[in-house]
Length: 62
Image (tube, rainbow, N blue to C red; front, side, top):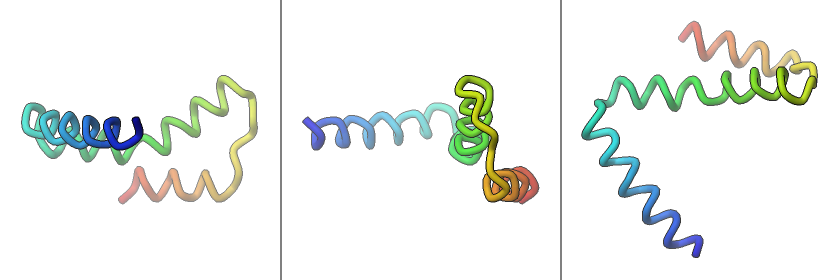
């Protein structure tokens, strides 16, 4: 089951890059940690750590 899921992921991932372009994929992948941390903050009401804040600023800045 896991191997099948990984195989589908790879195929779908690369076909999505072909359809949307590399720039969009980089934005999506690069923003995932920032967005997941923000969702955790909003939904679970857990205060983000200092490390998360620094990493998020670095991800946005660079």
